[in-house]
Image 1 (cartoon, rainbow, N blue to C red):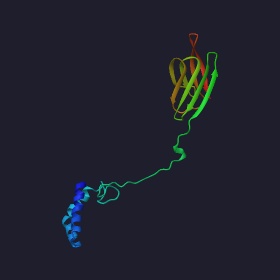
Image 2: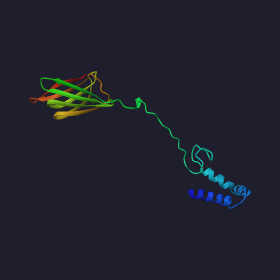
Image 3: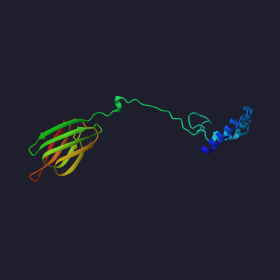
Length: 171
């Protein structure tokens, strides 16, 4: 396509700059008008007319429309919130550091006694997440969804060969 375009301009230039008159250029165009129309039709944008400025023109370059958007406060995600919860039971001292990212939240739990299992419950006391551990003193829970104050975390504490439930309210 580039070669054809270059050849076309070369031929037009040859007639124009050879010292020929304007009438000779018109004669040259009229003799080759069908070739010009065919060339323009081949290079016309889809659904458009030759020479449309909305798509590709004769040169094959696309017109680029620049658009910019202004960032608003709503575009930025809210800053993460952190909460610290502590509780003591007969079997363990428990600490939970919660980071709420609004689309999910992380809870880092530390216990003075080993934990075998954990259960996360929502505001209606329905189990929404759980996991088994291998007698861990420290572990992290990454839960998808938004944190709501009032949720609870039940830890199954292993002590003296038995499991004891300990409730940690996240409020």
